[in-house]
Amino acid sequence: MTLRQLVKRSSADQILELDIRAADDRDDHDTISLIPPPPLAFLSSKHSANLQTSAHLTSLESQPMSAAYRKYADLIPSISEPEWNQLNSLVDQDPDSFDNWEKLIQATEALEGGLGRSSSPEVIEQARRVFDAFLGKFPLLFGYWKRYADAEFAISGSDASELIYQRAVASIPGSVDLWTSYCSLKMETCPDDEEVRDLFDTAADFVGLDFLSHTFWDKYIEFEERMERQDLLIKLLERIIHIPMHQYARYFESYTTLGATRPIDELASEQDISDIKKSITNADRMGKPKSHAEVEREVRTQIHKLHTKIFSKTQEETMSRWPFEAEIKRPYFHVTLIDESELVNWRKYLDFEELEGDVERIRFLYEKCLVATALYDEFWFRYARWTLSQGEDLYEDVRNIYRRGSALFVPICRPAFRVAYAHFEEGTGEISLARDIFESELVELPGNLEILVARANLERRVAGVDAAIQFYKNELQSNTNDVYTKGSLVAEWSKLIWTSKGSDQEARDVFVQYKDKCLDSRYFWINYLQFELGLPTSSEIEHERYKRISEVHYEMRTTARLPPTTVKDLSHTYMVYLLERGGASAIQEYNRLDAEVNG
Image (cartoon, rainbow, N blue to C red; front, side, top):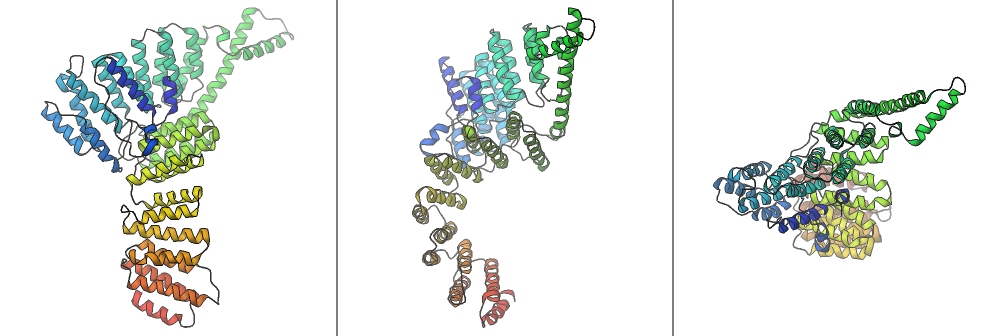
């Protein structure tokens, strides 16, 4: 598989494939191979094997992953450097501390006077392990990939450095800096011009639309100038002048200057040139015929007018994007929070591009946005939904978005995105995978009601109401769920029976069966009371309804162990019922409760 294909996959398993290639290459050179990636905390069962990756990111909120990274850091043994060992120990104790990692990397780079070919095998091993562990945790920090590639260049040369760059651009496909550095390395070390040019073309597909991509395009232009391929250079500049970017005018000037020295057939399409010549011929019929030189001058003039229109359009598109680009203060990833004003700007920028309707630019902006906002699930949600709206033929792209967000970036403590991923897989017929996603979430967030209810509803949809009920029963018998979670599950079970089967008695029996076990569950008693209040009634059966509602309220006040504020709120709900639906004696009970509850 080519680098272009790997990066375009943009899925959670792409980095592992590159890691394996890097490991194999090192083994061929009798050097230390990459350490294995940490366990993937998001998927389990057979599907986790398909998504293992060394490019995990865990935000500071995501505590379940900390243990996994402590195990990862444990693979970095001590060496005879007291200061380095101390820093390594600090990382081991708190793998979520970015400052500790930075200090460890600086100390690693300084071992034995700096990394290089003369470094000992032990130090080289340590350096690789530290970089691999750090970039496994923070794969979007492009500057550290660059430092890693530079270190490998100093240790083993260009081939080893290129392997790091391949992993880097697969981790951050939209990084102008990484692609520019990678292409620069290739320019200086690869004797095959076509191979270098192919890498530039690949890079252009991923970063060429960036508003600040001028450093990359300058490097590409430098390469073609060095190769003295003016025919390819004019094509390159013609491609660039269509792109709205920060320094668009400079490229148009370069194109105009070079175009004056190039053959006409390199400056426009065959159709455009043919149309221009026809218009000139038609004009000649009205007067004196022009010479060949005059015709060529006229053709060039008309072609320049076409290019001027292109320039005007590019200028307009640049100006329309400028306000959004100017508000992006942090286009790179960091573990700290982004200012709300920047989040608002990203939302507006995405709105703008979606209204413009250029699918390629929309997709590019989402990828750019998700570097800076990787820890914010709202943008992953938005990207997945937009991609899904483009058609069923993009299902694999949607799947990769969910995989990347779930396996790499969205904090474990925010389960909604992974629930949406399970829903997506269920919708595509991957029921087993959807179940595995839920199961793995529950490993990290045991007792999470949102996940449990979503899982129960999956069973209801694919296997029927009884399967969902059985799931609730199993969870109520589980030791992993506390009394508060179990109280909520009872309420959800009862609601399922009532809404699916329409049997109020069967639904009530569930509440009655578990009420003595859920005395501390606020959610249980709220839903028990609301259930009785919400049942359909009539004048003939309202007295029976009153007895049941009154009993629930009495048990809630006298038996349940609820916070006083909850008891007060529920009593207020019951008092409203007395006023609106109570009988002749209800007002006496209302006045008594008013004195007791509000007095």
